[in-house]
Image 1 (cartoon, one colour):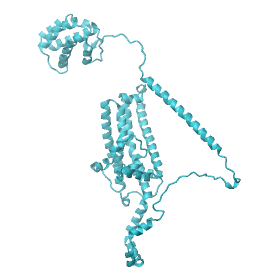
Image 2 (tube, one colour):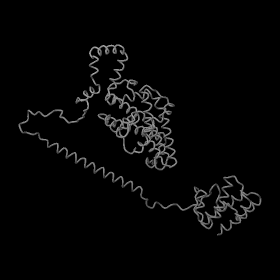
Image 3 (cartoon, helix red, strand yellow):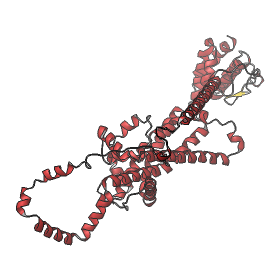
Amino acid sequence: MQPADIAIALRRRSPWEAMDLGLSMLQRWWRLVYLPHLIVAALIGAAAFGAAWALGRPWVALAAIWWLKPLNDRVVLHVLSRAVFGERQGTRAVFAQAGQWLRTGLLPYLLFRWWPDMARSFYLPVRQLEGQRYSQARARKSQLGRRVHGYAVWLTLVCMHFELVLYWSLGLGVELLLPATASEGRDFFESLQTGEVWGWADVMAYAFAVALLEPFYVAAGFALYLNRRSVLEGWDIEVALRRIAERHAAAVAAVLMVVFVAFNPADALAQKDPRQEIAEVLKAPEFPHQRDTTEWRWRKPWDLKDREPGEQRDLSWLGALGQALADGVRVLFWVAAAALLAYALWWAARLLPRGAGPASEPYRPPESLFGMELAPEKLPADVAAAAAALAAEGKLREALGLLYRGALSDLVHRQGVMLLASHTEGEVLSLVPGEKRNYMKDLVDLWRHCAYGRLKPGRAQVDALAQGYRGFVTG
């Protein structure tokens, strides 16, 4: 990055004014920033939703979108950093140079994402733009963070609250558009765990909030970084001098040449060693020494003239105040601990099995199952003979369906198997007694091939099932 190529007005700003400059930068180049950012956000969202859908847990998508925020930050910073220094890149160019913003310590940062980085947008350029790593990066962050680290933390907290407000507003907006009965009994955490429709709606609202607000956060942090470097390295002075030199290059060069020749004889210059001269200048105490100190001072200092010799000011009230504050903090701590313990007990009680509920209604055999009437009075007196007669007439599908209806009706009404309308064929097989399961399996398999696979059953198979039907119902 060369300060002479910068496309913004450089001057020393307060940290809050510098962050406002970042928002102005985003307002100016929002088209360049948002298109690649939204593409990356859409890819992250699709992968997160796919994994969450496969697991049936919406919270997985929410956690993945939060975890991969640094990936969004890097593409936004890449576009802004190029635009600030005079290079406006289109979306295709941004993704063509994806290696430049992906190979910036992204993977190690994601592995340690559990550790909160409350100044992420301010320190990101140190790794991505300067290429600093390990101890050099820590030293550089320490140097840049003096006097402005707290502002970067406040930026993170403010953006976090804006994100939560937008997220909750979207969720409440959706809820306002639905009938009141649709949201009754809604549990936020339960919907994120069980895969209810509300859980997916919450994750989509959070993804939208992140996609909309993350560029504002990165832009403000980047502008704060630029302002800090301008203060430390005198970028504004350098740019001003370069512009003066460009306007008056010829005149300044001529004047400097005259002065150089007049006041620096050749023999004197030959005797001077530039390195030695520089070393002598750097020996001055103000060059290598820098120290930041913080001290408390009274806004209205105590007038020592009013004090008698040997008299000391009574500061015992400070001890009493400190003791009162300590007692208050101790009370708040125990109240918070009791509340936390009560919440933990309440949560554990919810997880415990409930007591015996009201007596369930007696079992009522379903009137139909898989679209088949199961009432005994609607079946022939001799199902096996009727099925064999249908098979002899070539009506193999009707014969097979009659045997299937008769078997299901016998299971429900005579053998006491509790089948429900919601059961599948596989669940029916699991409820059939063991000695009759083989026959029922052959019957169900042949019916599946016939009903769903459109395969015509064989005459011999249907006759065999008709002959075995009597053993099934009498065994």
